[in-house]
Amino acid sequence: MAAPSKQPAGVPSLTTALDTADMLKAMRDVLGLSQDNFAAKVGMKRQQISAYENRHHSASLTTLAEIAVKAGVRIEVTIHAPGGADAGTDAGS
Image 1 (tube, rainbow, N blue to C red):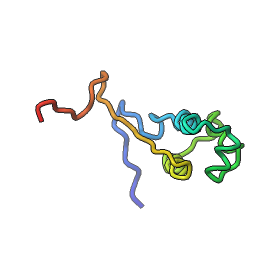
Image 2 (cartoon, one colour):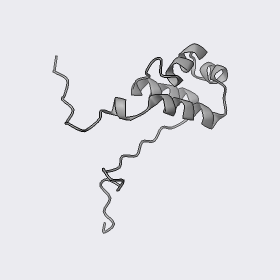
Image 3 (cartoon, rainbow, N blue to C red):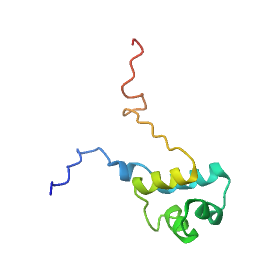
Image 4 (cartoon, helix red, strand yellow):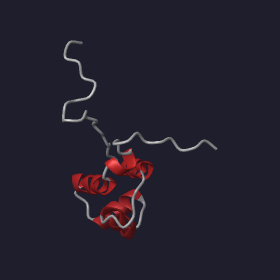
């Protein structure tokens, strides 16, 4: 089994940098659903949705992606360079 890769100093891992609780709530808000209705739509219990949204449990990015597919929404992540400038953009190309 390979050893886990070491995260460079000062660079947060995606699982800690992305707030999965806020992303899950945003999905539900976009659809205009209560926790009960959202849970039914994605095949989960309301208590699990509540636990994720209230940060009692953390949803993995895989779980978040699976929920998004079941909910019929798309998650987009934008990565920016430090200082707010877009990473990898080249106006001359």
